[in-house]
Structure formats: structure tokens, C-alpha cells
Amino acid sequence: MMRVKLLLAATAVVASFCAQAQNLQTQREFRGAWLHTIFQSQYSRQSTDENKQYLCDQLDRLKAAGCNAVIFQVRPQADAFYPSELEPWSRHLTGKAGVAPSPQWDPLKFMINEAHARGMELHAWLNPYRVSTSAGEKLPKNHIYYKHPERFVTYDKKLYFDPALQANREFIVQVVEDIIARYDVDAIHMDDYFYPYPKQGEEFPDDDSYSATGGGMDRGDWRRHNVDMLIEDIHNAIVAKKPWVRFGISPFGIWRNKKSDPRGSDTNGLQNYDSLYADVLLWTEKGWVDYMVPQLYWELEHKTASAEVLAYWWNENANGRHMYFGQAVRKTMDKHDIGGSTDPNQLAHKIRLSRELQHVQGNCWWPAYDITSNYKGVADSLQQKEQRNIALVPAYTWIDDKAPDKVRGLKAKVCGTGVNLTWNAPSTDDAMQVARFFVVYRDGKAINVTDATSYVDMNPEKGKHTYAVTVLDRMNNESKPSAKRIIVK
Image 1: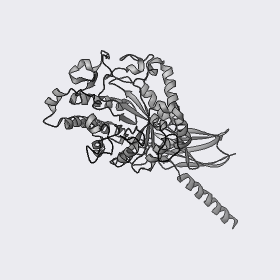
Image 2: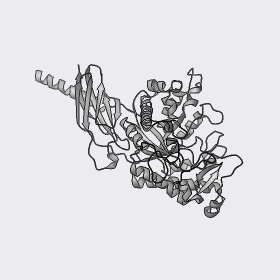
Image 3: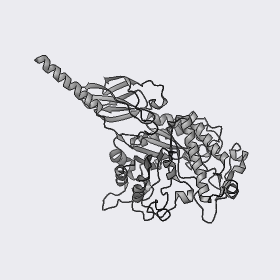
Image 4: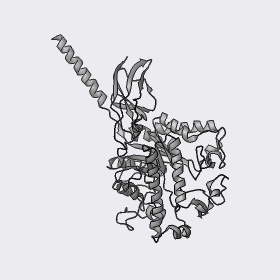
């Protein structure tokens, strides 16, 4: 009888252990931040080592605030924050366009490695058409403009690739292909700058291109088609070369106003469709982009463009792709909450709204520098409240939904005041199932995300603990856990 009781007790312990190992509670939410480089003079003032330390500090602060992805601007204006044979070094990195950093380093590669080491995704952010940002800006001698000046136009005293030309689309696609071929980026990202924001009294100078390729189309439809072709071509290039690399767009927050289109939002602001010639809804309908981050930079109660009204509208127009909301830190922290709330800012309200909407999977913060400088306590609030628990980036199941294999050889050992965990990544010939990150759990709760195959849990409470480790593949599909029970005395 005693042996039966002991056996039953042991069976109960094993069952409890297995249940705890399987009951992993992890939130799925995109928590990004835009780290822009254009007009950021600190990079050109700092040495290579200082820039590396600075960027590591930015990533540390973002991770501490609960962010799990950084959108790093690597092509601000037909230039590069990485060594490129296609475009010159960026003046925003070195202070002078075309001049390499000394000693030379690769900011894009550095940021990929450092972000991944912290369990964060790295999205490479490119601007497609912009070449200069002011009148009289001098381009380096090796710029493509000097080889093919006929492919560029000047508008509002700034230089742009002519979006109508196939040669320009091919070149921009070539830039994207070069990045994804040489770098282990998680995504290619573009923001709201397609055809330039309109300047009153000045028409975009594309008469010659329209005469040559318009084919009798309405000019607005023709311009939108030009951008559509670029987006489709980039999508096709990514799928052909590295289908696990995602493609995301962060458009201006209004597609169309309802007064222009019954499908539009109840707003009265500038329109993507009519002013920037970006039919962003078409791109998700066609499956050309994997995520959309509309820039809902206004206050919740804004009379012309309410962030609350737009949040509901974009939720209804996600078209089966991931939808994240772009949030302006200062507009969020400077305004009191609405609806009788006593909150001094709109942070909690906006995040709560994004979590309540069925087709929204997260937020992205503009700019990252306002998070890392803790503007009005935003980082403290995110770290202590809204983003205090670890969240995993949602899985992109339409690209691939197969879960990776489990980690192998998990070991757990008490070392001093910590528990040292080690494991081996599963082997695979399938590029989709390659282990991008590992998630470490203690007693069912995620405590770290890392790209390493080891982790030390410092100062856990005394007693019995169940540790589990899972694999996240390139699409953020999660494996079943491997688990160990350990006693901390």
C-alpha cells in the first residue's frame, strides 16, 4: 500500500510539473520604436566607439521599457548607414555625404547583432524616393544622380527619384535586394513618404513622364499605379530571395476622408490616396505588405483627425495583415485623458484601446528618442505598467505557421545566487524554422528573450521552480517547451 501511495504521489508531482511546463503565459504584442537617423547630428559628432556605446544604450533603454522591435533608419535619403556599392555613406552618420566613418564600421550589421542579442527584432527602414532635403544640398560625386540626372525631378527645391520611371523602381528594388542578401534583417520598412507632401501652389513636375507613360489614365490614378508597382515589386523581390523577411509600411494616418470616399474615415485631414498617391489599403488587400503601422499621431479627441476615430477605422481595414498603431510620444504624454478620466496623459487609454480592438496587434513609438529620454516619465510608465510583462511579436502565420522543433539538452544548475540554464538549438534545414530567439520561462511566466543558448536567472526566490525554454522561429512561431524542475535553497 505504501508503495502505491508513493507511486501515486510521484505521478501527481510529474503531472503537476508537466502541466506547469506546458502552461506558458506569454502576451503577443508588437512593441516597436522608430529610431530615425535623419537630422540627428549626434552620430556625426561622436566617434565610432561612442556611436556603438550610444546605440547600445538606446537599445537597453528600449528593452527596459518593454519594446521588442526597433525600426532603424538606414536609408534616409538615397544614402546608407551601411557600406554600399549602390549608394554613398550618409551625411547623417559622418557629417559629409559619401565619406565613410573612421574607423569604418557597419551600423546596420551592428544594430542587427545588438538588437538580436537583446531579443529584439531589427527592421531596416528605407525612404524610397527622397534624395535631398533642402535647396543647394551637394551630393557626393558617386551618387547615381550624376550618372542619370534625367531620372530625377526637383519639387519644393528638393530632389526626388521620379516615381514613374521603371529604371528607378528597379534601382530601389536593387537596394532592398542588396540589404536582404547581405543582412539578417527581420523586415524592410517604409514610412509615409511616397510622392512628396504637397506644397501649395506648386505641381509635382511629372508632365514628361505622364506624357510618356500615362496612357490616357487619370493622373492621380497613374501616380498611384506607379507607387503600387514599386510596392508589388519589392514584395516579389523579398519573397523570391528571403520569404521570411517581412515588409511593413507606416502610412500617414488617414487613407481617405469619408467626404471623399464612403469607405473613408470620419476625418477631415490630408489623405494618403489623394495627396501622397499611396493606396495603402490596396497593398494589404493584395497581400503585398505584411504589416501596417498607420501614424495615429493625434490626440484622442482631435477635431480634424481623432486618434480614437481612426483607431476604430484602421481596425476595420486591416485586411488580414498585422495592424500596429503608430503613437507620437509627445502628443500622448502632453494631453490629458478624455471621458472623465483623471489621467494626466493619454498613454494608458491609447494602449488599452489598441488591445481591445480585434485586428490590432500592437503599437510603435515615435520617436524612440522620446522613450529613451523618458519624456514626461513615459519609459517609467511603460516599464512599470503598460509594458511591464514580456511580449512576443505576433506570428506571421500567412507566411509560415509551422512551429519549430524544441530545444535540445536543456540543463539547469544552481550557481551561487542564480540558476544557470543552457541548451542547444534544434537543427533544421528549413530556413523558416531556424531559431531566431529563445524564450525563457520560470513557473510559466516569460522572464527573458535571447538569441543565446544560455541564460542566468539571478536571485530567484527560494523553493521549487519549473524552468522552460522555447524556440521562436523567423515568423515568431513558438515551439513546445523543454523544461526542468530545480530547487533553489
